[in-house]
Image (cartoon, rainbow, N blue to C red; front, top):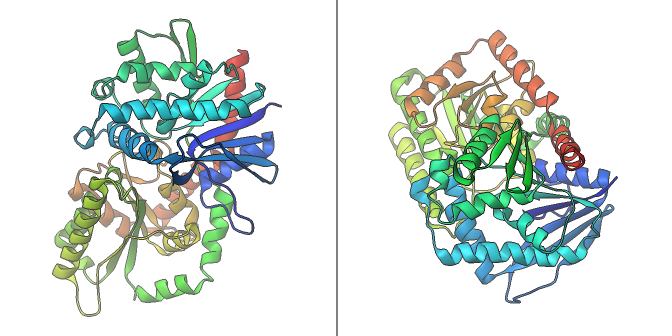
Length: 458
């Protein structure tokens, strides 16, 4: 079995005696533990050294090779091109794009820098798995370094239409760089088809089933929806009921139904529209006043980017407006929390909720909705209101699907969820849980790596 090399923008090194922070990190560590190998990427630090060497740390038989970014790389590669050009365009938000040629140049140069630092650590007998939009050109840079190992790329976010992609200066080179990989994975069938359309229309690529050819390059395509570690999350949710904080939360509800949301603070998550929808719920269905609470956790994210700080202020204003208009001395309808909680605490929040509200404007997959499903007590589960523009909507047919741009439609779905009979809630939850269990996190990485080996040998 070949060793595995995982490459991502950030590396999650397990801390001794502490549980793994996120489900995706658990999956990648599980894949590395099975294959043996290395995880390479940014350590989250910023330094003044222009060419630092990777620091290698060994944990449980896995090598973690990390290096810092310098100030220019952090500003231009990470905050600039990755998160002010690729992120908004790939999430269908052209108005948020801020292109600077210098940022694009540093983006490609940083990928070349990563390739130069990674190449000496390779033996040539590995499977290389590259993750997400920060590192699209890395495969091409590694090939220039003389690396011929099987190489796959997984895109965690949506893929934009050809028309939106054309708005990125240099889009043709960006699109062509995908063809340095042997296997390209997407979250949904729609993303795969959108990529094919762009490659055929812009590059003149030729398609045969799920294989694209561009010049002498051959690229296999596949669909691999990311999921969760269901068993672990169910145990955490059940255990949360013994925690004092969760008991206090349940006691504080005072008989009110709890609507819960938990997201990164990001304009793609539809948080402003979600707040407006809850206000419409109280206005259009006044019998819910004093009988429902909405708790929204918004974890801080990319605070150095102006749009994110503006969004934080907007949400604080919206929450204050709703509470000022509707609160009583003993009832405050919106609990808006701009801080990061450990996953175990969020599982307790989901366990206590009657409704999960997950309405991104656009999302590659969205694992929060799957975590909500896993957290529920199957004997008396809550209902899920989910954006039809989240990748997870393709799998969770038991959710109430809504257009996230229509706050009135979200309010109507909330009313339906709050009134949903017990039998229907159980039926919908069982359907969603079966889907999540059938395609769990382990199956995700196993399928991708199996197909990567086949893409090369086939």
